Length: 407
Image 1 (cartoon, rainbow, N blue to C red):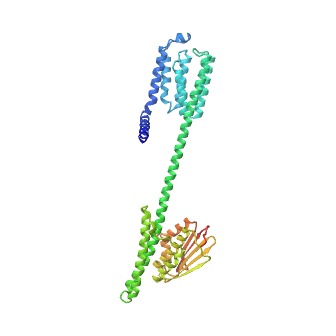
Image 2: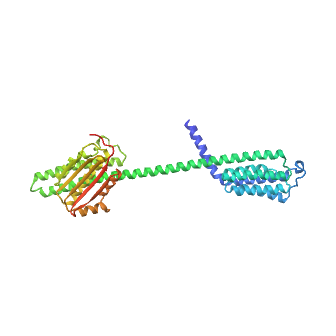
Image 3: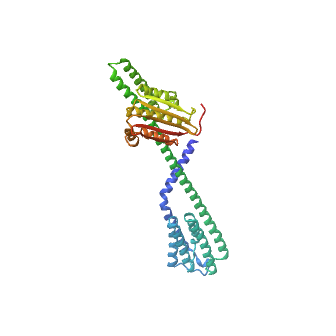
C-alpha cells in the first residue's frame, strides 16, 4: 500500500513539474495548431456546397483567420485582448462573406479562456457580446448562418462561458485558501518565535535571580571568612558553611534551568518553585550575611497563584540582594500585605546605595530591577523603586491575583 501511495505521489509530482516546464509553450502551441487548422479549413473546404453565397478564400480571409488563431497566444496573459482580436478576425471573415469554418468552434475556446482567466464581469460581457453579434449577423443574413445554427451557437456559448467561470471560481477559491493557509502558517511561526523569546527571557530572569543572589551571599561570606579566619575560626567556619549551602542551592537550580534550555525533563530533582512561604529562609540567609532583616506580614495569609507567589518571592529576593550589594546598610525591612485583589510587596533600607541602584535598574548595565518590572507587567501588576529621602532605597510591587486559593 505504501508503494502505491509513493508511486502515485511521484507521478503527481512529476506531472506537476512537467506542467510547469511546458506551461510557457502551451499557449503558443495551441495558437499555432488552431491557426494552421483554421486556415486549412478555410482553403480546403468546398464553400459552394455549403452556401452558394460564400466567397472563395482570398488573402484577406486567410490573414484574418490567421490573426484570429494567433490571438490565442494571449488567452491567459491578456484574455480580454485575445478575445477581442479573435472576435474581430471572425467578423472580418464573416462580413466579407467568407467561410468561417473552424473559427466558429475555436470561438468557444476563446470565450472559455476569457471566462476562466479574466474577471467574472469580463466573461459575462464577452458572452453577451457574442450573443449580440450572432443576432446582428443573423439579421444581416450573412451566409452559412441559419436559425437552427443560431440557437445551437447560443447554447454552446453559454456552456463554454459556464465551464470557464466555474474553473475561475475554483481557482480563486483555491488561491484564497492558500493565502489563508500562508497567513495562518506565518502567524503560527510568529507565535512560536515569540514563545521562544518569552521562554528565554523567563529563564534568563530566573538565572539572574538565582545567580545574583547566591553570588552576592557567597561574596559577602567569603569576605567575612577571609577577614576573621585568623582571629575567629568559628565565624570563618560559619561563613564557609553558608558558602557551601548557598553554592549547592544555586547549582541545583542552575542545573534545572539549563535542563529546560536543552528541552530536558528535569524530573523530580527539579527544585520546587519558591513562594512567599520561603521568605523566612531567605531572610535567614541575609541575616547570616550580616544584614538584619525585619519581616512584617499583614492581612490574611493565603496561597496565591504559583506565578504570583514566585514573582513576589523574586521581588523580595532581588531587593534584598541589592541591599547586600549596594546599600552598605545592615538593616532592611520587608513588608507583605495580603489584599483582596492580590498582594503588595515592599522592601526598604536606610543605606547609601540609592543612586547606584537607580542606575542599575534603569540603564543597560544591570538586569535585576528591569527583570522585576518585566515580571510584574506580565502579571498585570505595578513596580516602583527609587531612593527615599535621598538616602535609603525602596522597592514596591503590587501583584494582582483575582482567583485566590484558601490555605
